[in-house]
Length: 431
Image (cartoon, rainbow, N blue to C red; front, side, top):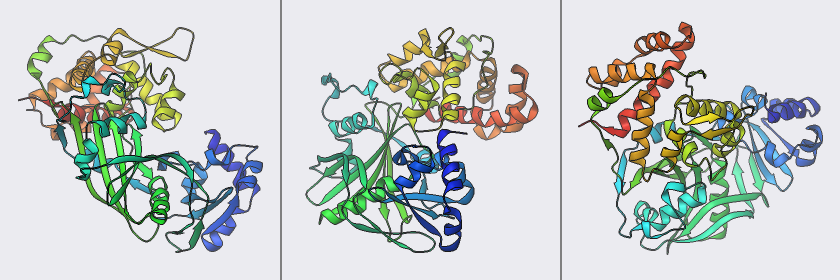
């Protein structure tokens, strides 16, 4: 149980919130009451529930969501369809990667390095610098005019389900970046690393606020940077909170091929295995995030599991999974008598690599050192690289052959193995 889980448990025990929500579908609660009932936990942080998984248990079990309505006041409401969160996993997985070649050579800039983009603002600034944002928006003129926190104007929000209208005014809004063209304003919410979903408030409140302040059309966009990939998704909002649709989505590499040319047979012939490491078998599905940890290790101080969790805005359990994946692949090692990690020699090689293609190849070589993955990749090659032939019934016995896991656990871990194999297939061009 996290500290937020415990705090919200106390709040719902001390305050009669659930009966009121049962009666009318929502309840208003003050920041003062939240702070008092939670033993002085910061209300703003307790209300920061940016993904479905980050919601406290009491919110998950009762299908609840929370929104700020005034400075020091919130509304908690029943959200049975969970419209507060928009799923991104399918969009990010299915959008094809395009190679983008900017006219201007970005390598002449020494203060903004694509190899070391360790914040959302740096990633957006780089995308703007190479005119990637102009390419996506089809704008010839685009200027950064909005960034940071501010207080909102007055606007209305219609809560899903019961259609209760909420008057919002003076709440804190944060915009990662806002760009203005002659006719439009583009509002960006940015993330480092892929996310499964996001709280639409992060885009909806700035959208509503700037719709009040400007006569120009307001365009909400979601931006993701991970391991040399730039994802941009444009949305359109409806009248009711939770009504939004994806207008278009793109994924770009900059001056790099979408896939790394590779002779897999030769790589397999040259590979040498080492014993499976004494660490939990991988449960981290996104290998690009593993690389993000390594490339941002020094600049962002990702030396322990809580720091990794905070960097990617997920819970410590996920931070544990991704730290262990880096350890399993031989990219991280433990500092003796400590909970801290440091980069191995192989991790340093990846961190210092000049491009995505090189990083990916080095990571694949690390995978081949592990007997279970070496066997899976050999099977993949023998099956003409057909992923459909690598089901759980095939992968689980291979895992058990090399690692002491029962059948049930091995079957669960097979999903991670399959995710890693999709990464290999999506990032390598086998000719």
